[in-house]
Length: 101
Image (tube, rainbow, N blue to C red):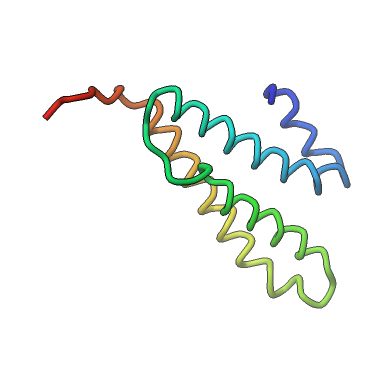
């Protein structure tokens, strides 16, 4: 996804769908980069947590339950960005050397 397309998340109503696409594409991009560098992964990087946050954010718009989902949505949002930042730091770090003891 070109960086310019991330801004589409600021368009009202489109952002409800676009946030899911951003999460899936970021996870796919990270997974491709980890595989390219031969760094082992057990999952799609951040996708489960990101989708959970998107769902909770959507539920915040439903009257009557918004007060229940607001705090978990914020917690998931913070956890998602911490997780993505950790993946980014891992990729920005020095490359792993195979066979080093």
